Length: 344
Image 1: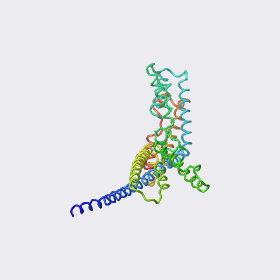
Image 2 (image 1 turned 90 degrees about the vertical axis):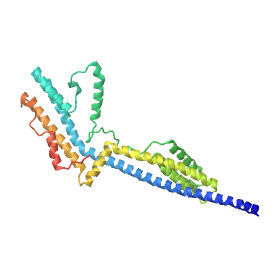
Image 3 (image 1 turned 135 degrees about the horizontal axis):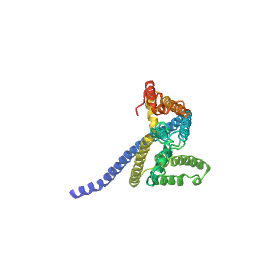
Image 4 (image 1 turned 45 degrees about the vertical axis):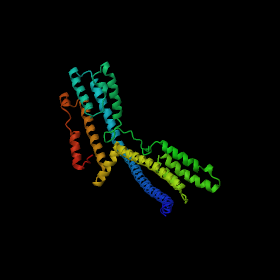
């Protein structure tokens, strides 16, 4: 009797273990599916945030260029005129050596302090050991000529979508797999061809934008069928889900990194300031234009002062003492009283 009971218990335990194991796998699949969905949602949110940021960067850049161009064209014109005035003054043979040196020093100070653009040829000639340094300085100057309102080099292409990453190996692999399955040439009839064509449009858009999450989503949506899975099939599905979750996690981190890098750019910082100013009820563009007006006013006064000396309306002593006009720092204080400056 004990032996028969033992055999009966052993024969019944195998199906129970299989059932529990199969149930555990399905619980695992449900858990992984939830993780998969959450990652897809998080990626979509970050990509939307990145897209909105780049779009606002483009809009603000275009608006800034449009509104500031007239001011900076005038500033550049005045800058060139001031250089021309100094060239005429320094080439005047009636000016003594000591007087010419004083004028040259003023000219150099104006360049070094950023009141006018630098002209390296008016500084002392470098030794042969410093020729390379001068070339680098010239390159730096060429870059500074492209600076924007914030004093940052502006190399941003307003037509460039910087939110698009380069295709990765995993992205290409999934794309080729989907393209092989849903290419219209694989269709057996016209109705299927139309269906495959629409799917391929989605696949191409996702691939071109580097959207791995969307490709995986398409793959899962199109592959879902109401079939019964064996235990081996379920285990394979678990493995596939785990691989996809790993890829999605990598893409999520990549999108977050791209977003952080874009925010660090001059244009990203501009959007940050714009949003902050808007929350405080201020207009950042008006503030920046006001600063441009200050620069223009200051440079115009400097131009008139140098011209007066060239035309002998003031003496060298008066010229060396400096112009009797409100300097740029005083003008900025006046502007700050009119506007609340946004803290960066």
